[in-house]
Image 1 (cartoon, helix red, strand yellow):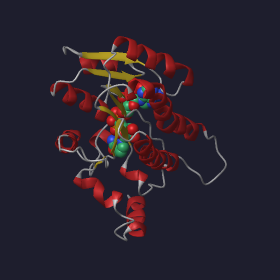
Image 2 (image 1 turned 180 degrees about the vertical axis):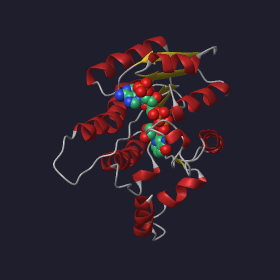
Image 3 (image 1 turned 180 degrees about the horizontal axis):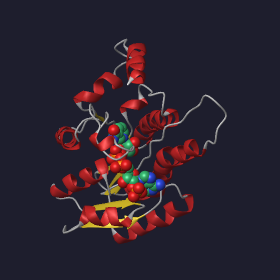
Image 4 (image 1 turned 60 degrees about the vertical axis):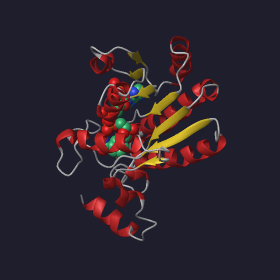
Length: 240
Ligand SMILES: NC(=O)c1ccc[n+]([C@@H]2O[C@H](COP(=O)([O-])OP(=O)(O)OC[C@H]3O[C@@H](n4cnc5c(N)ncnc54)[C@H](OP(=O)(O)O)[C@@H]3O)[C@@H](O)[C@H]2O)c1
């Protein structure tokens, strides 16, 4: 199992918990020291440095992963960044560009680089990490929300195209206490990481695995439009 962004937050917890269930896990990200912390003292856990923002890095990285772990059959596209953006005047859009490259092109490129390999494996699965904000936008992070809505849509197309070959699962977290944005790991009203992960792992172990891993706290976002609450939820989110 390969988990991008496995050096911290949700990715690290997924890595440790899937490893505890008996999986060999490779964690990948830019900061080697964070990856080493994740795998410290564990057998069958490996750390590999990659910057998913760098298009030149992804194919060689995927080739190395396959060469070193030829039985790899699960990819978790978890790496992501979230930046605030002020759209009220013409501004430097570097944050928007980096967000699209990391959160959207990163998973597209890495999935593409691993598709032939995954299709050749039994029980192959791709998990794409979206967000509750894919379904209702938080106006302060417009490009972030847009990349997550795009990953939701892309996952549905991939699921159809790879039907019978690779299973596609979407993990859509609510607000969780991690270091995704400064101060978020202690922010009130955000779900403690451990509570989130307990619920997530229970859902992952349902048979069959749900197509979307949705904890209770994300349902008000996921189903806002279907349930006729979309405008209210947009307003509520943006007051926060
Ligand atoms: N926490 C929440 O409230 C929440 C809610 C909804 C969705 N999510 C999603 O959950 C995923 C994990 O986020 P998190 O909350 O666990 O935050 P986090 O701790 O900041 O994790 C993000 C991870 O992505 C890695 N990453 C970022 N840019 C990268 C790049 N260019 N190349 C390789 N790795 C990169 C980071 O490692 P390096 O910096 O070492 O590269 C980091 O380990 C993200 O996709 C996020 O959008 C989180």
